Image (cartoon, rainbow, N blue to C red):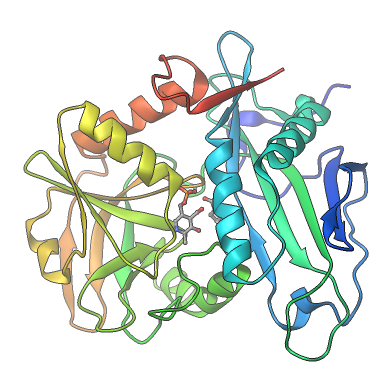
Amino acid sequence: MENDVKWSELSFGYRKTDYNVRCFYRNGQWGELEISSSEVIPIHMSATCLHYGQEAFEGLKVFRGKDGKIRVFRVDRNAQRLQSSARGLVMAEFPTAKFEEAVGKAVKLNERFIPPYGSGASLYIRPLLIGMSAFVGVKPSEEYLFLIFVTPVGPYFKTGFKPVPVCIMRSFDRAAPQGTGCYKVGGNYAASLIAGQKAYEKGYAAVLYLDPREKLYLDECGPANFLAIRNNTYITPASNSILPSITNESLIQLAADMGLKVERRPVPVSELDSFEETAECGTAAVITPISRIDDLDENRSWVYSKDGKPGPVCEKLYKRLSAIQTGDAPDPYGWVRIIE
Ligand code: PLP
Ligand code: COI
């Protein structure tokens, strides 16, 4: 069946595709993978995911190569991170092999929605894990639903690979110091909506969160990790309250391969003075360079791109990563799996 998607005009949003894949956890075990063409899930009004936020999700991408092959990027790492999020919220862990099988099925069943090579778009895969038991007391669910839907997407920021402005606002945190920031759970995103909305209203693409304990260190940037380049060094924050980004983990390796030193450590706000390039990175954001950072509490600004162009190191990293994801360059670390 043909479809009328204008691939190069896609934004980052939901589009209906043909099928999704589901799996239920009941009586202490996961069932078989089920295929559904419904966009709706049956859910009890008292389910723990609705009341007590027992919900975790993932995000990964699939690319069509020049050779026509379908490549999924680091699917095993997303499976492992979902398991970590499940442990963090006392949910049933979804096994890696089953996760990979579900991704393969969801992609193949919706193959006609994979954007063509060179369109700048990709197929975004959204796995979801939710507590389904009808409890009113605050306790972990006994039943779970794992689900994967896919949707074709364009760039997360509508400007694509162009620097965007971000802001610092100390009156908001997305996560607590020993809380759930290191898990990919809905509650963190709910907590970030208010600051995000204020930032968008003021013309910023994202909020650069500071560490929630002291507000002295950089944490992460909206739905992406923060990175900076200085003196041939790739610098990225280490913090308990940020999500361990699989894109960042990959860029760290690519930066080292390019001869950069890598520092993953607490990064004080004061270091913003010395950076040559700054960017945010993630599956949706890929690498999005930061044009300027405005500290709205202290009335300070740091400018990293005056001409609307990405810095040279970010550009090189972006090209290296994209080439591996699409199969244009060899995959020396086995990050890519071909879906047949
Ligand atoms: N940080 C947050 C809060 C995110 O939502 C994401 C997106 O997944 C990331 C970082 C980047 O993680 P990854 O590179 O694994 O997509
Ligand atoms: C991702 O990059 O995959 C994300 O999950 C970011 C966001 C859209 C929540």
